[in-house]
Amino acid sequence: MDNGSIIQVGGWDPTDLIQNNIIFGVCVVAAILHTLLWSQMIMRKIKFDITLLFSLGYVSTDIFLLLFYFIAYAIRIRSWIPITLATCYFEAYAMFYFNILETYSLMALNISRYWQIVRNPNTYIDHRKMIIVSCVITPFLVAINLIIQQSFGWSVLYSIPGSSCNVSFTNIPVQVWNISIILVIPILLSFCLLFRAFRFLQQVQAGQLHIRRNHHRKLTIQTLIFYSFWFVFWLPGMIVNCLDSDYVDGTTNFIVILLSTIETLCDPIVGIFLDKRIAQVWKKSFKWVYRQPAVQKSTRVTPAVEIKTVR
Image 1 (cartoon, one colour):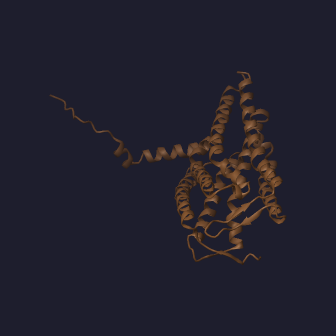
Image 2: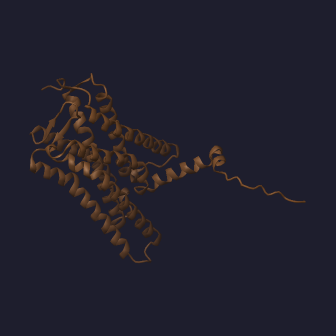
Image 3: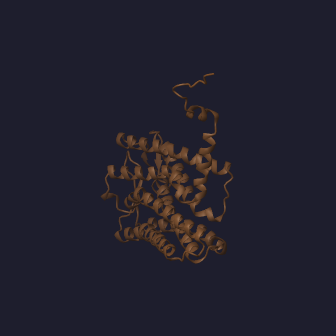
């Protein structure tokens, strides 16, 4: 079947429409928060250097996830628009692909920080080329993995009238492979490195760069907090995506997508645990808002009883 073939008439059934309207509302709020974050980072002249690469790479994937959902929503909300095979591939793979890149962005961030804390404080300078090359190669490797599975029939694109297109991995070894390289290895490696970095900081002698040690300990704890939040909201959706769709009903699929969307909404806020510059952006923005005359006037406390000086 060629990419221009019509495989179904567009539009969702009533249940899917209600569910997607809820997700759309969450995405709108998420888009506003992300727009505020990026605009403030530019306005506040935050220094964009290689040390911010993986944190920004993670946050950038949210932009693509929101953009792709808005495109899919715009197509599906118009029931007269036919769904072609190309549209179906886009709907099934685009968001799944960028969710995978989120995992590797966080894993790369944790590897770099561990190496920076334990081995070499100048990691981002001494290994600049390796870091840049990894950022270029990883998206291609992820894409090749998905293309090979689709080409050999290990993943199946399916389209049910009234529902969004999805990809299903019916081959059990492929399911194990995907869960291993997309979830188990990156997540276990990240948590392992976080705990090893924390143990290293506990064992380091008190006289060795006390200020830097405290900074790294705080950074490690903050990253662990962020990872725990991300783990709870993001992981269920990716597990469902890596399995055979026959095992997942519509309600479960909606819940995990909603959780993942809420995680996307919260990323601009909980991103303060990823990099202190994101925290500085929000701090400066709140200070600027607080200094506005209208805000100061509304927050000024007027005494209930006016005290006059008696002469």
